[in-house]
Image (tube, rainbow, N blue to C red; front, side, top):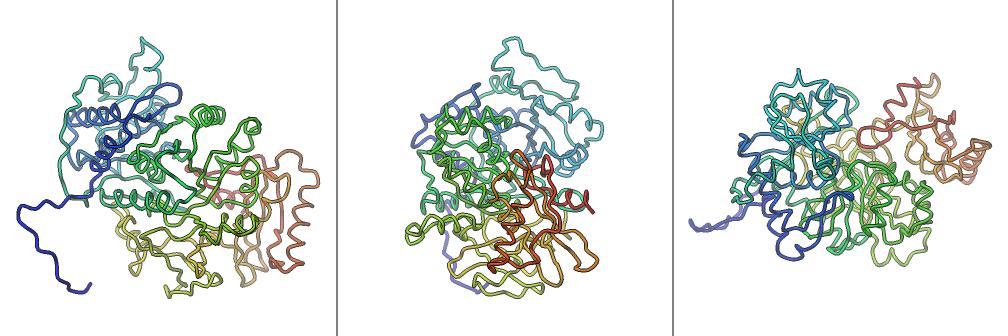
Length: 552
């Protein structure tokens, strides 16, 4: 950095720190009468939300939680989770959003590694904790969460967890809503969660108050300012990305600041989700393609009006087939991109005034691109030696990033942290191209690129083409070892109904594209296998590691 003239500071001047408590403070100023809704069980306005956040903070402080301590949450997507998003960091503690879909041994590792002191746990996850409680080393207390408290007047906590303080609502009601949240350094750790890779233990990804504050600002700038989708304070928001996964992509923070009406669906059940979409007039959601595919494939979706619903897809590529199926139901879909390490948003599809004048087919081509580089983010592509490659839409290399909301490392893992931040750029592990208009196209994960006969094939490109064949519900393409070519592509397909002639139609479609010169001949899969279900990771992405292991 160059030496510059720094501003003089008056000794008594106050320089506001970028803290989560200051995001919370905005919620009482503009439309605090709007509602935060949990299924058909609970509803409150933002006045009550603020009171409950303060009560939760006092509950934690009264039970020994101190600044710097880690408090974990194991719950479905709920108003309680949203309260924890604000209450825990605002007292200087660290929120650990536990991925409840991990294997018990991995959940145990994350609890111990994060040094959790107290856990808020929904009773649905008690069996998981029972199986590992003898090996948990740092947790002193548990608070039990239950939906039965809203419907059963005689409900009482029944658990064998040592150190259980009681049930969440009962404890909340017994604590004061009077608290002055302290000031502290904005670089204080606010959250931690764990991401799983192909090998080794889960890695802890952490973010500061400053990073989450600025990521929230960037979301509002892009989605509200530049009108991506668009998203406004008048939208009714319902997340369909688990709140344990990268802060539900940061949208609960943004929606809370804007006083959006918010709907939290709890456990994801197709019938409940569709019912809430209609009954609460939901207009904005975000999810992985698996969830959207599940909803658009439901017979109920054909009977209801979804024309006001806007959906941001991330976590995996939006295929043309799914985009077309959504458009047929008048759902407005766009694609975004990010990763756990980036808080997460790095790019979202944005259509300029010129883009909006294009024919529908060309607009669809843009919507299934990864997205345009987000505000305040710098993205480049590099070769194997970290040399920058041109942004001409043709050159492909690993995508690297810089920005103010990128994790500064992996918790207690300096070796992996140095690899992540090699040469001062965060390495995403994704192969991409970037064109002259800052549109990013993810070609594949570096580990999923299929290298055949000295050429590389994008598994995502083949999946996108196969998905457009009538009768295909879902598909995954993987590379498997080949004695002659090194690797060859193999396709796994879930059919909507009958598989009769489906393989022939898929091959015919690909062959026509080969004959037209649109794709290379080596892109034709060696095999097309039909399966009942494509395995997913804990956050809903296609588990290609498992698919390769099963077929190697």
